Length: 448
Image 1 (tube, one colour):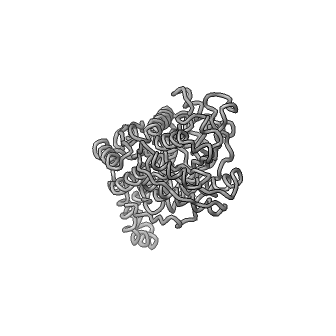
Image 2 (tube, rainbow, N blue to C red; image 1 turned 120 degrees about the horizontal axis):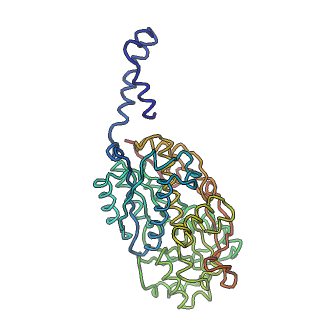
């Protein structure tokens, strides 16, 4: 129930009740329910203090330093573009959030940025400062799933909506889901389910795979999902090499990989870890004997390792800029991004941009910043048009339903321009790639 409707209900006075006779008596009997409805708007989180002025604040916890810093910097650009368009009432943002006029519910969107350093404790401290010092109504940003899960828990406790940017772990909207958290991006299960048949068709069903796995929730759940779906296609899992996040030297792991008898190296490492490990694998001569697969590809990997290595490599990603040739809203996004930053956007900027636009849409549909009502607006499952087609959220686990591409690296001779790194093999139907409800163990908590 929105504010307007509550005021209307509360406007029934005693005289009108008496005139209504028996009907009025029945309505009086319902009075406690009306009082309860009014109580639903009791202060919660930073509501109403955080929206009493003419602006609303978003706290951005981004990896400005650490192994995922390139993705964090790209996310910041996506957030800033979306906020700029919201405050200007730009036509591009209205295509995604059609109720938007200027700002969000008429309030200017302001934001602050803190460096999460790819560390959960640092991110939680930054989010807590935003919530308590800046009266943030939303916290957003992540690349590491360990960071996203930690932020999601603290924001749920603080009754502040949290929106991860990149978070690949199955657990984010699985066993660690929270009522106040909504993940938009594709993740391990969906990426692996979608790419496994493509790999079997292109590389063959009789493959022996070994995995390079970062030692935290993203790495372990991506390994589990990739093994599950590739083995269904006939692949054999030879083993895994588990490395610490932010490792610099991969020689000990690569020696074991070289001696494993595998013909396919599945790199689950992300960000700088993926780039460093693949470049060292090249130096070891492994790439002459093995195919590389990157099921959850980080932004800028292609640029960091170069097209000579990336050529022929298959991976899933959240977005690739040539999708603008298929989707008008993707063209809007790529054009605006290039105009502002003189560069092509990657999936980390895309997710940050779309996450912000869809938050604005949920608030506009709720007609209030009151967090439980905004959550219910997300949970209503309203389908909007995003840069890659239909996009919405599942009410039961707060997972985004979003399409994403499978890509294959181009050889240098096939590139039409310096940013033409990938061909799009297919655009995955995000709804079909999702797990059945309950498979990943999500149990959402209370609204209040």
